[in-house]
Image (tube, rainbow, N blue to C red):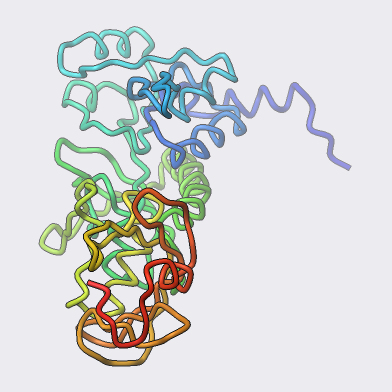
Length: 324
């Protein structure tokens, strides 16, 4: 029976080429990656995260999810507002990390920082590059109706997610899966990919796979307007939009009475009618440019979340009426 002693643990650490890490990340998606570094005994010298933002009705400043985890483990946290004034570079140079790990940090790193660590800067990105470069790859994968997505580890370059790829890990996207649910599934996949990537770099077997830049697509930041539903589009496109904008910014439309209705879940129905026409009496099924969409859960302006039939009853809508 093999017992792992403190001595063998220490000797294992000494054999590592990468020990000292600086981690740069901000949202929930990045938390499992930081935790994986801690659990695998990497020395996280510091965490760099976006500045705290006010939340809730009281607008109280709340730490980023990555900062909260770092503080639990007594890891120093920096929250700079700039990266190009030389301050962060000088701080990093003093720490002398072996590698910088970036996961959903929210800013592009300048060249002086990229060139600083011995083993470079690597990133865990929530798509199968070169598809969906940018800040919202998971949401746009769902909005665009992709069947498969995943995570990519890559060496950071000066462009937006343009660096050479190292490893990828694929996963299917569920027919009714929301972007929020996909975030939760991809985050631990990203953490596993990170540890495998670090091991490959340490062992000298990490590939550098140039991206096919001519096949790149972009995933820009979402806005509230991204969630606007156009019923002239197909029911499948609307279903994908509802899933991809859940939990934020949430899909919505303006109803016949001028009120904004947010939509949280839907189902494609094989029926036809005039665009915007209600096709059922006991379910909120609305005709689209192609097929129809069942609005399962909605949130009328100024009210709480209810099912589609309850909304119909509340505003006295019936089959044949126009919703928009």
